[in-house]
Length: 269
Image (tube, rainbow, N blue to C red; front, side, top):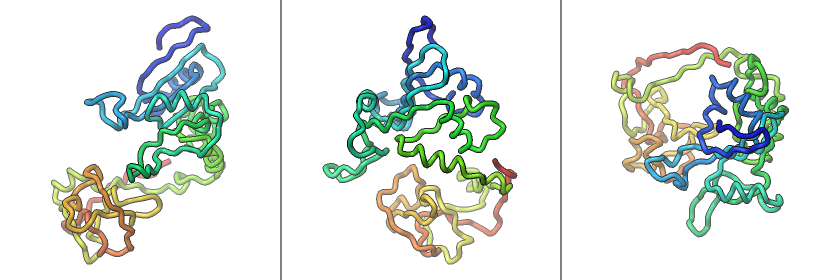
């Protein structure tokens, strides 16, 4: 951090990895006491030209002298005008999201609407709620809790309600498997790659691109499309509601034989 006078202010642009990483707790705790504004951006509009990629994250950070934790936190920003206008906004109008439907373009576009609700104020109580949500009871202090990235203040009550729920998945001691490794296990012959309508679910491996919130039957590319053999990075342009049957599994990867490797990493918290 740049040196400044006791009452001085420094503004820096840098990644926010120290505010989210597992090993940076002490640095994060010290940073929080100096933060005044943290504004997290995605490079989707190429504010930084290539070779900086569109999904690169960076943040604008305003630091001052050390004090009790209290800073303004804005996330999912795509243009600096949204930051400045949100800080001056009167709170009127609809609450923004990550994307919004654009009638003129006929598609969803990045939401650039400024709004007062984009400004989340983070203090010790906020960090304590976030720590409870994460279920990390062994954390030395709530003040080194990694940042969460709520879009607006409308999510605050939901976060608090979930944080207050006493049961956690870790309490059930689940066994977690990382599943197949897409490249290594295919080369080893555990499965082959191609579109199919298998007769049995035992021959089906769902790709990440087909798994949506609360359901694996989320979408598939059109039959015969070259992308039925692709991954999510290839892009899928059409969405179909699937029925839970093996006949509707275009674009999945098909197991090559019945032998499947089990990788169990043990319990998780």
